[in-house]
Amino acid sequence: MINLHQKFNHYLNTPRKLDLLDINERIISYGWSDDGSNLTGYYVQTENYRLHFDLKENFKFKEDWTVA
Image (cartoon, rainbow, N blue to C red; front, side, top):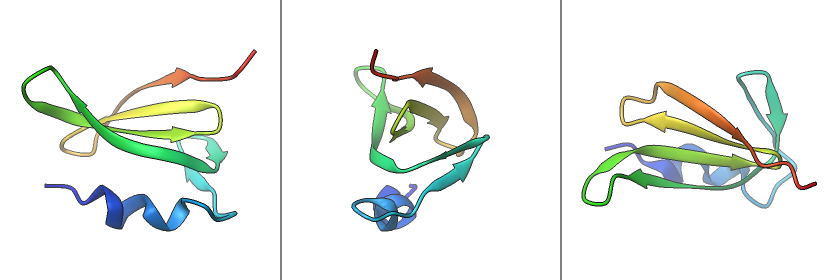
């Protein structure tokens, strides 16, 4: 199992930025994704995007979370 706390916690509440997939932003939160009964992956919420990954840590897609 992926340890999200170990992987991303050092980005929270600091000026450190995630530099991944041409996104260079602070991480706001992270968590697990599920289908209602099983874990299917995890997400990383940045200032403007939510990045979705599967359980093998492969990037799936990103959502634009820019506030209008």
